[in-house]
Length: 73
Image (cartoon, rainbow, N blue to C red; front, side):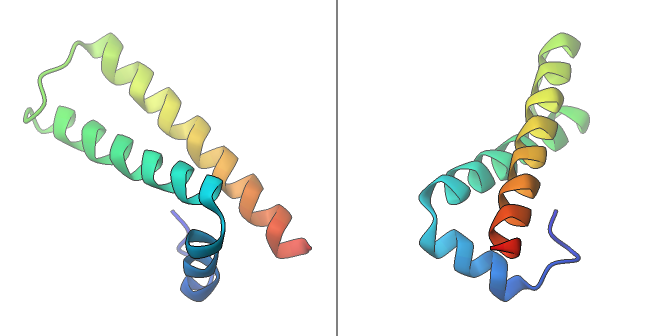
């Protein structure tokens, strides 16, 4: 998700910012669940998968905004 950003900056945010860490972990969990649903390991209705994808995207957007605000300051 943060391929273009230095890992050291991401690690520092994960260590120092509880909200960033919570959002990051939520995104990671949703990513795994969506992948599991796609390969059949997690049987979910298509509507549930669609909702998870929307939440994952919203979480990613919040993380990116959070990172950009911290990087600028």
